[in-house]
Length: 212
Image 1: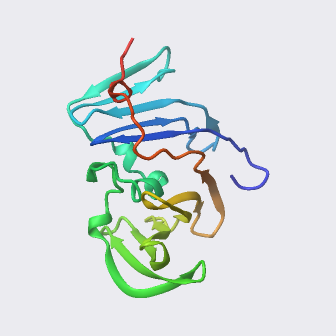
Image 2 (image 1 turned 90 degrees about the vertical axis):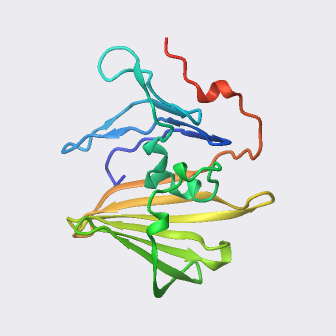
């Protein structure tokens, strides 16, 4: 968050298993015009057939949730998780940031972390544009992602990686900054990967939320 503003720290968990996914989302909600941080807990799980949404604290009083006849979970495909879902894809395109297939090279480069990173862009009519800068030193993973919105505000992610014996590269930290059209910082988030397990057994029950 900007200096002298409210700050919050939380821990999320993301798990993949042969077309299955679970996301324990503990990020606070930023209230509209006030900017107030509201604590919340959400659990999303897909067993490859159905998706389950669980809100342990409920929207009003008590826990609630629902089941959808759709294996996809849109919350997993959001920009905040893109550094992970574009590196470890969970064996399904359903969990990857949704516009990857629509990116087109611009022919331009930008120097980031001492490397000329190739620029790719996706423009969605009048709804803004998304730009990726891919780093050849880390197997063309995104070093920076920037989403420019219709009102001129934009979100920028800057991503750091470390080598990994199994998957090649793993994102270790990333910073997301949202700026207004005038350049004022509205939201700043730093994500740090605390622990990574590759090919570890995950019980099927983790992808099948039981509602009480």
